[in-house]
Structure formats: C-alpha cells, structure tokens
Image (tube, rainbow, N blue to C red; front, side, top):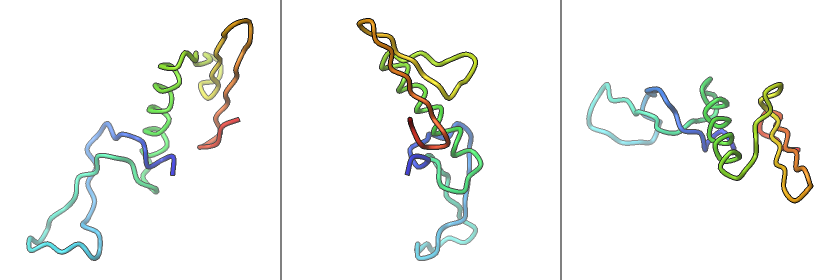
Amino acid sequence: TAFLHGELTEEVYMDIPPGYNTTQTGTVCRLRKALYGLKQSPRAWFGRFTMAMKNNGFKQCNSDHTSFLKHRKGKVTALIIYVDDML
C-alpha cells in the first residue's frame, strides 16, 4: 500500500471507474494521489518518504539515494529502501 500514499506533482486523468454513476458522458477523474500501475507512483511515494525521513533527522546518502543515516548520541541508524521495503 506504500505507493498509494504518494502525492502526484503533475496532472493525471483516468476514465470514470465501473460502478460510478454519472449522467455526463465523456467525464474523467483527475487523480490527486498515486495509484498502483501508474508509472509516477514509485517516484511520488519515494519523494514523500524522503521528506519524512529528512524531517526526522535522517540524511540521504549522496552515493545511494535509497540509503538514509541518522547520527544520535554516538550511534548510527541506517535505513535502506528497496522498492517499498525497508531494512
């Protein structure tokens, strides 16, 4: 469900889903959040995740943007992302 939390930065439209009743023909929906299957979904989720990590004191590694480090009281916390899994 991680990809469903990404905020889209560009305008993306989709056909009205089956089961949604509308009297207008040719109507479409504008997406505000990412959906599974959109090519923008992984990037939108990762952007939101990156901001959350930075807001919580983590630094994004320059050599690997999927790695985050936090130094606190002489200890290091490392967080590594692979797709939507965290280690």
